[in-house]
Length: 479
Ligand code: ADP
Ligand code: GLC
Image 1 (cartoon, protein in one colour):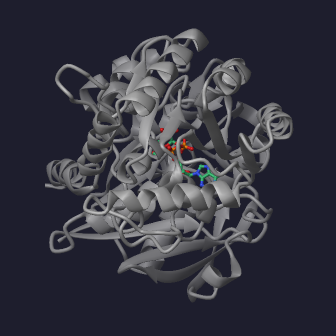
Image 2: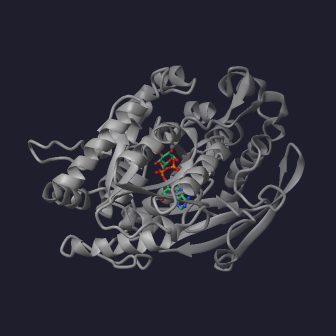
């Protein structure tokens, strides 16, 4: 039995701001429990909802010497769907109403977290074969492991995997100002951990980890080029021998149109007509005009530049005034995008409805009730929303980048193949034209549209296949 420890800054069902939490909450369940003992270790944020905190029990507490002095580390534990979760407790670091605050606080916070994960292992008497580190917040684990514990027999055989969920976020800050890294050797701090004269957590993790993965094959290629590398393309080319792309899946239990309690009318391939009831319910709940003929476009997203909202804003008025479409949007993020969504909401009542905020329930209702799902990302390491929408028979319109390219097959009207609509260039006109094309198929070729909905629902985007790839990676590394 190989022991695997997932280290990450968020994980379903305890704390989620995006797709990372979905992956951490699902992948461990899909790894073969007979071959792998998989556990997860997260920070115990004060913002974890009370109902989830109540599931935790206290395991132990101790103090560890760190650059700021003796630091308290508490460890709590909880089970979720058969998986053991540990939580690192320290109210000084993990306060606040969001896991992430200001980057200058976050670098010390997650350096602390990474040190605390390693310091906890002997206390827990849990010696993993592999620590699987996710994103920059856990990227210093491979560094501290080699630098501080290299000669310690307990830690000697531990291997590390670093998974990049988003190369844009790197954990960068002024080298001399990160107190919780101050005791690393100058060689490490000013060379391996340095990029563009700053500390770069992600770069350090990439260099120190035994294997590096990212969340789709296309993204694994894109990050080797200046256009997609976010300044680290040279590093990615250097480590290409240990880098691979493994596409994400989604949790088929959580996202199941036939059993989803948040839907007005659960439905499946056999009673696809029921989906209409979800459209009606969505229109009613979001204050849209009741109309079964309109093409209802869903959006569920972090409202950031990454997700392509400048393109969306650019064409929105023309789209709303020239096509019989409605938009149901849910999201939170940058002020400018929240504001533009509020503007359309006010200017086009009954046709554009925006909910600014975070709501699992509203998200499920949009995935279940919309006809198409719009996701024109500038870049997208994998993307889960398009996979969720396909599972609910909601046809995605995406830009051909990263995981969107790998998971959405463009509609081909001659061969009647494909699971969505896609466009290549980051260009508002191109996007507008492809929305128009989708609109034409939706309005005038309803039989073909229905066949495409079915292909979407049949596409296998479960974790099953990708979990096997991770198993192979772990087996190869821990032998
Ligand atoms: P990213 O991780 O880059 O935000 P993904 O597509 O990988 O994008 O994952 C996003 C996840 O977060 C999906 O599960 C999506 O449904 C969810 N999500 C995003 N924004 C919201 C929101 N405002 N309310 C509820 N869920 C959201
Ligand atoms: C990141 C990426 C997204 C990916 C998710 C989970 O948030 O932006 O594309 O699906 O991580 O891996």
